[in-house]
Image (cartoon, rainbow, N blue to C red):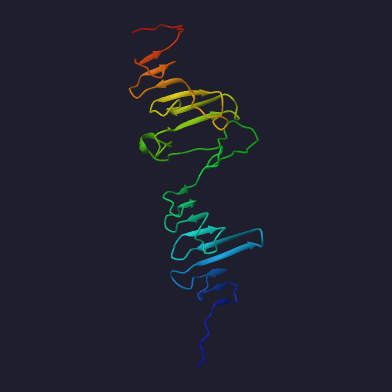
Length: 231
């Protein structure tokens, strides 16, 4: 008997091309051979680089992969329903979700502002709430998780100089006090905690020159007051 031909590719008179698809409605329309099959495209520079993209077998998300043509180790994914984008994860839980190990002495992500035309206010980063009653005023969160030897803090450094300030929880040690600390070295040049300049403990006591304030204001050292101090 004669085997009936199977159409594998269609080129319509409009110029649209279909692969695995007879109802071609795009310039290039690729459909998997089965509902659980893979639909992918590969771009390659021989001996230099390759990238594959498409829909992995049994999945609904879009994937971009430079290792496996079958898209099983994607560098980036976009979820179909939510539109969430993931780098280093195939299940991003928010609009932009990055998972990976930070580069030593660098970061997991860098935002670099190269604007150079002067002016007054051109920030490299801005976080906004556009509706009221959001998280009781919390716009961002800094968190350490799964460790008892670290606490979250922000480092202020002017061009990686020897004069650095750190603000946050336990900047002088792994504790829950809020503190402003000073360091004569950048953390990626030497190890060590900041030297505390001001501490607010969990009872609300403020310490200057001491990390264990026993009073609402506890100053260890001499002070100078030019105005009225009353009780």
